[in-house]
Length: 201
Image (cartoon, rainbow, N blue to C red; front, top):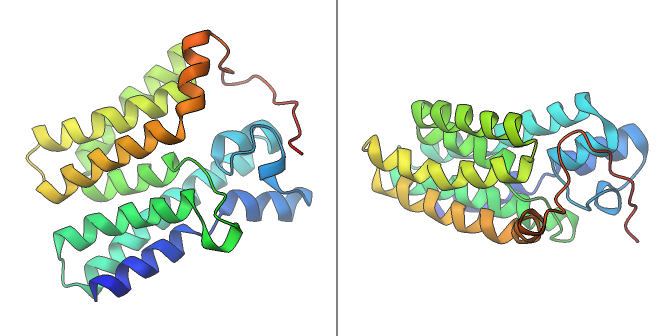
């Protein structure tokens, strides 16, 4: 049942709401617009606030839903529950339905964080929002989120599986944001509210 639940979690994560919403509303492949990322931030820059909020919520919910389904299928196995969140994010980042070209996994990580610990989610979320509000760098806020989540899970004494998987998610976050890290260090990173003009070929 664990193998089945993880497969289902990956397939659920592979549903790219950014791609589907952009195709439905504007007839475009979001991965050829703006930064080329199939996620909420690029959706915000290309399509605006409403579609971006929808993508953010739906991407978070699919991670949480995958964990909930796995909890039910495995009789509450904490390792399977934690790995389900990881596999949902793997699906989001490398979706089988969309040529393995997905997003960076932060919105789905938000849902997984909520599934691990509402309190850790709340504290990490508040700090992340403050970082974004002060700096207007979504990427910086995302990196802060994945960095502090395992720390708060550890401090709160949560399941070792939750802490271990959240640490893996931090590694994923840094890998997927490597270009953003370089841009932040060089002062070239786009701030929230700056329109995205590029169309990728």
